[in-house]
Figure: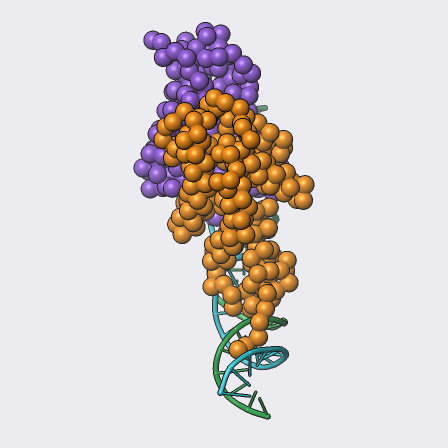
Length: 202
Length: 202
DNA sequence: GGAATACTTGACCGATCGGTCTACATCGGG
DNA sequence: CCCGATGTAGACCGATCGGTCAAGTATTCC
């Protein structure tokens, strides 16, 4: 009953792109509506507020990216190669965005959390959730790597946290220097942190 | 000639605090003026624009923090202890801000760069400059550590970059989880990255 | 003791902000 | 075929945004 529409979906896409390439505060509701080809009345039909749209946008993006994560962290893939793929994934995304937008955009989660972390608790919690999800993938790969004696055994959660933090830092560097090639060092930094004892088997 | 005033200084302090604990976009010129006890007209007497104030604010903060950096990276201090002190410095600042403001605020450079990196090139460049300065301190300490055979010899710039990125990532983590104790792992992560061969002398 | 300079004051500006509201178009189910 | 539900349209709102301006006050130099 009632008519149907993909306006909600278009709003989610437009908002994510605009916020990622600019910032939450500098992107207006009108601007998002324009890009999505949606009128303001419709916007507030689908989302109670701009902040709610932001939340929904990030949840939506995660849902879309999730298959990629599941694939690169598939148990079929050798554990250390999963982590390599993860590095390559991050680098690929940043390069792609830099090419499309002409500027390295950094990690969207870091961007939003940096801007609104102290002002919107819901949003901060959501970003923390994404970070936790990312670290869960890493942790699982690390456990498998330890089990296969590819890396020294130790607390995988702690190590996952280190790797994750390192990746965020490298993305910030790339953004600040507006140079995606700064991310080339990420994989080797990760390897170093892992203290890899054997070369990656396959 | 003409009257004198510390309004400029008060504006710089107020602006830095407000922007650090909130965000550039969410802090208005009026708000900064209120906190500084300065009227808007005076604001625009000292700064041509809000963006220029932000620039000046960060430069000013660096100038104030510089003695701390010079002290903790003094050649008199054993190289690896310099790096330990640097970690402690970061943790201390974040704890202090969290206590004062009730929220972990993260690295002010990362915050601003994340928010405005794609929108204001001058500002992005300035943040890059600060990152470069920080890495210069680290590089020098690392070179000394290598010279003293405290850590394996290799490219100190690359290593400094890793350490720096790691520290940024940990600060983002702490902010996102609003938990300064997340930074406790920073020092050990840094040590791990350094692959320290000997315990710290002295 | 001017005159020039440095700073203060507060009213004011147009633009834009996030958000509301009402009338209307379009659909599916009975 | 019509009714109720869903989505669209766009004018409208008060608040706030960054920024301007003209007039006034303090200070120092000559």
